[in-house]
Length: 269
Image 1 (cartoon, one colour):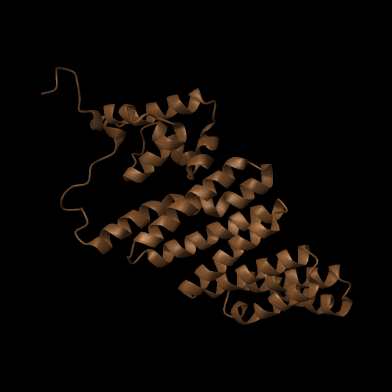
Image 2 (cartoon, one colour; image 1 turned 30 degrees about the vertical axis):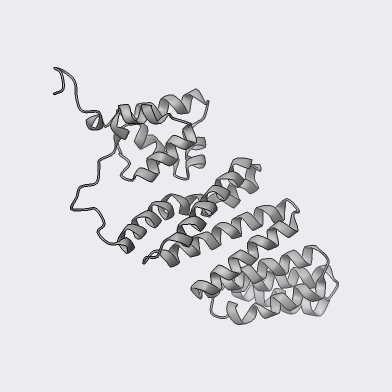
């Protein structure tokens, strides 16, 4: 029985937030820097530190503890600051359990994947690269072992993670590595039959060929992407024409450049 004035560790909604803040400040990070490494927003971190919001998934807590290097015994001492799953909410089928695990990966990964290249492009932060690698590895492992309704969304997210990794490698002039990521993206796009993913992967591959000076192969790849782009978003269609125009311009094909850039401008308007 708890002594007078004591409380069960998992009832203190502020204990976990204070722990997070202490370890964040110990590393000299701002809330924004922690949010970037963790894959959530600065406001979300602020709410957790102030005890205004509690984490509801074990994976979220474990990942945050991993980022901050919080010892497991410190988490255990405060009950991790999150509610435990009751028997009535626990998944009873393997497929349901798979979905819970995939959801726990997808939710925090989405923001990190979507913003990763912009963050990298702005300040060349190497932590973005390692974070993407970690996300991709976890998604790959989950996709290999799990089967549930969230399998395809997880595959799509993994494809976009490969796209971001490919763009970062492309900017770093590591074309072989970039093409490897874009090929993974292409295969995942074919697996889920997503025209946007397929077309984007082929466009990126064409751009790699352009940068390597292989004009004929570049334009051939970009033309081949037209079939898939036709069923994709306008943004993807516009990107294909823009990339094709760039290839024609660099290799002095004026009339072909004008046709391509006119198409890109028409879609933009």
